[in-house]
Structures are given as C-alpha cells and as structure tokens.
Amino acid sequence: MNTPKSRTGHLFVLEGIDGSGKTCVCEQLTEILRSENYDVVRLREPTHESQWGKEIREKSPGGELTPDEELELYTKDREWHITTKIQPALEEGKVVLMDRYFFASGAYQSTVLDLHWREILQINREELSAPEPDIVFILDVPAEIGLERATGRSGKANLQFEKLDRLIRVRRNYLEIAEHDISNVKLIDSLKPLQQVIYEIHKIIIDFINNSKSEPL
Image 1 (cartoon, rainbow, N blue to C red):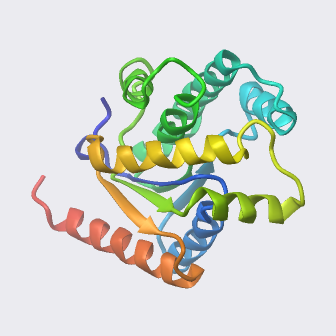
Image 2: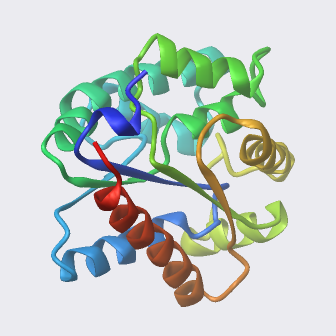
C-alpha cells in the first residue's frame, strides 16, 4: 500500500453522493490553494482521458452499463489514472485534490454487485496499489436533496447513478465508510452554505500540511 508517510506529496479526496457539492468545492479549493502558492493538481474520476473513463461518461447517462461492466471500467480507468497522473504528481511533491476516488467504487458499485464496500476498497488497495489519501472528505447530504441538486443542474438524471433508491444506499455506504474504514475520513455536513463547507475543508487541509512539515522524518 502506498501510504502517506512514504511520499512527499499530499492526496486529499472529496467524496459524496451525486449533488453533495464535491465538484464545486474541489474547483474552488483548487483556486484558493493555488492563490496561496501551493502546487495543486486537480483530478477527477471517472477520467476524461482514458478510453475506459470516456466509455463510462458516454454510456452512464442512459444507464447502459451492467454492474460488472461498471466495476470493470472504473477499475481499468483508475489503474490508468494511478499510473499516469496520481502517482507521478505525489512523487513530485504536489498537492493532489481528487473529485472521487476508489471510495466511490465501494459506495456505488457495492449497491449493484454481490460485493461489500470493504471488498471493493481492498481490491483497489491491494491489486491496484492505490495510493492512500491523507484525508478523505465525505460531503454528506440526504439522498433526496442530492438528487434534487444533481438533476436541477441539467434538468435530467444520469440513469446509471442518479436514482433515489440507489443514492439512499450509496449514502448509507459512505456513512459506514466514514465510521469503519481504516482511512483518515472527515465527515462534512454539506447542507451548510457552500462557502462554509469550503472554509472548513480548507482549514483542515492547511492544518494537516503544516503539521506534516513539523513531523520528524
């Protein structure tokens, strides 16, 4: 496992159900940290670059992926992402902000497969050697509000993921991950005003970076 202590960069992950606000928070946090002279790389999953990420983005709006296809495409996309983007950025000492990571696979794919979220996270950690985040921020909102926000942006739902019954189960998985996973997870109330959420996460990130500088090697 690629642990935080074995690298010079920092990895912070924003997770949450559709409509939790993570993408907007990630965008604004990137701008703030860059204005403070941090060397920030903003990444998101599924990617826009790999053939597997493109296939997810092409087929998921119409709900065209089977559960097995969904997991396979995310796994291949993430393997590519780790090798070409995440790991190099961490080795170069950059601050990596991620909009979704393998915790999303655990939360989402376990709702349609006969796999517990723990098993999916373990696959990513052991088989993909996925770098472990310094902090995972789970932005939490009720499923009904998340769906309302997500569909309100475009006027229509992503039929693969933006279904109320699925989002209810996904949120439950995220809450279980926050309580029981081995990662350093911070649960954030995303019903708060956007700027308050951004301020809270920014403070935690800055405190973490500053404290890591003062720790003995």
